[in-house]
Image 1 (cartoon, rainbow, N blue to C red):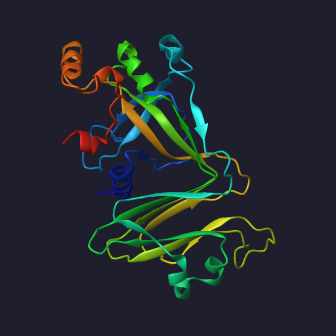
Image 2: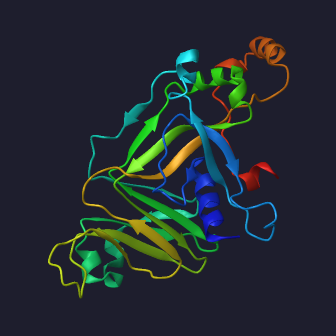
Length: 269
């Protein structure tokens, strides 16, 4: 299994959201399309990926207007310097003061930093950090169920929620890693001829896979996490199911949100 697949898989199981392997790829709530393996059919030996292929946008295509789906709402814009994170299920938050002996002087001076412990025997672990994160979402989520009537979107997926941030860091820890502290430094790099400081990610543990981008402009230009829903109805006869559900005191399917889309390797099992 590739690093990309392990990273996406671990964070999806914890959040039911897709972690982007390429956060610089532009994404908007309302985008619709399909999930693809990201490999030619003849390259069967390559690891199966899970790539969202955009085919349109329900707002730009006037589909949302047709069904009265409300415009997206943006949450979290009031905390420009806040650090947020999403982790796999085998990760625990750690008090960074307990690992001061492991921290470099640069990391110790970071005002933005966080520590994580990895459950012993829990296998590989994944962490996504976001600075200046905002969430754009469609509310209510049940309004997207009306898309079941749109033939062009049948068996497609729709971006119902998207995170945007100014800086991000993705970390995939090996099964032998015990803990890590990650911080955002604003000091000039050692050996640099420039006196101007540019933000960059630093960490205590150099094992595992790590990548990130840091920006001091404050502009939210990375899209590291998003939610997809499937435009397909669960169950059989909707009308009959609705009647039975009402009689049994269950929630009728027409007031439920669309089902979450799954990574291809999960949906095929």
